[in-house]
Image (cartoon, rainbow, N blue to C red):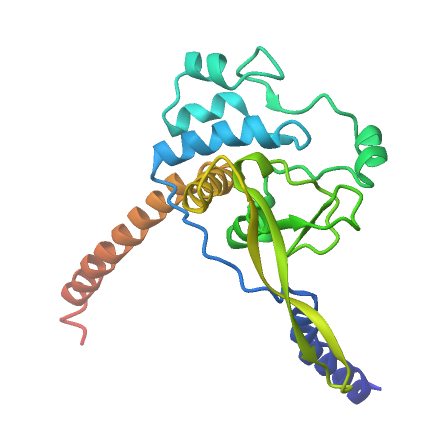
Length: 248
């Protein structure tokens, strides 16, 4: 009984990485330009988030007033970012109800408070830049890293329209099938690709900060604690040697 139990546990431990790999993203992810010390980038990202994301997605664990940490004044927040409320201390909620969202999109849009901590900044950065036209989808859009996504491409006017370019691959069963090789621009948007990448980079930078606003402070405190403990260790070592030199 005990041997069988141990064998089952070992099998589950060995099988877990395979399950994680099978459930993971197979599309190579682009590196998100995350710099939480760049307040200008965070401010631009906050503006993009409020204008393009906050219509359907809430960030209910985030308060507008917390944006003072990235260099915005309360008056700037009131003048430029408060569209759904008139109180800077309010959380970033939306007027759309979950039942309505589920009826319109098939599923309620997720709260984005900690989406980069859940999915990863690189995943979100790649996802937002790889929407492509797909007439088989209800919204007319699909996504390279999130197949059959229910979300439309809300920034299509900025990026333009991308279309998939396919290549033929042969599977293990010997049958051929079409897979997406890359995306190409078929209808230009208001921004160049470099400008759009920069805009999405600012947005993901802000969303990464929003997932843990105290991260920068935590890292500074942690570094200070490590330096203190290192210096204290040296002091304690020589102090101990001085006290115990007669014993040894």
